[in-house]
Length: 303
Ligand code: ADP
Image (cartoon, rainbow, N blue to C red; front, top):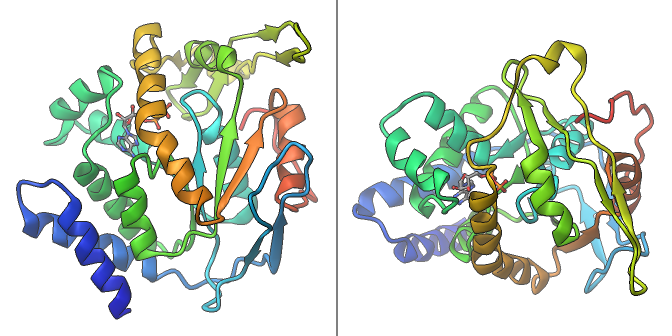
């Protein structure tokens, strides 16, 4: 514990904050929230690297933590790649919460809390929220989950900077980082086609992606993901899913978040997964890559 704490102090020092006391409290808060998980995952051992579409720089064995805690996984990937879809499906399957920091930011915006106007400007420009604010939101979410007896997590959208990755690595030992990859031509179309049900929050997509194979490169088809009738009249688009803002988000991802891939790659935690197409093709392959079996996949293709 003392080494974790000293790493926390170092991480705290690297955060640019107007108030060091606040940051110190936040990081300790995050640490506490992360260290209290204690329920078994039911997954004895998961071996990653089974699929030919994957490349792991070394074999990765995911074992149940000695304390018997739930899995702690992270999803990385460009805007529009489908992190939310696959993270949410896996969280249902593994019985751990899916925590998307983008959702936390949008919840804060919707609540019109004290941070709302500041966040609105940042998000509408496709920029990243400060490390301090995002850690504050994440800490509160983890604390609230802990109070409800939640354990483990699948993080989506965090960490997005090296500093966030260092802080997270300082407070807990992430088991696995799944790096979802999709051809660039599809990313913009997927963001522009995204539709969300304002009532149930489920994501759909009206884009039909049909990339023709050429010059030896294979084609790719991703069918639209239409909403069921009860959601169809309640669809909204995210305010940051405009062409200009998506391009800026993609630029920022490449600049700020791609180094996070290297961070985890060098620690042997990164599982690269090239999405072969839409959910029907990709989901079984992802499960295979994780050596997970979905005995009763009763979910529809809409995650
Ligand atoms: P994307 O589709 O671009 O991956 P998200 O839904 O994950 O978007 O996040 C929406 C916005 O919330 C981001 O553009 C950013 O402003 C903010 N955000 C989410 N997670 C983080 C983070 N870890 N660090 C900084 N900003 C974040």
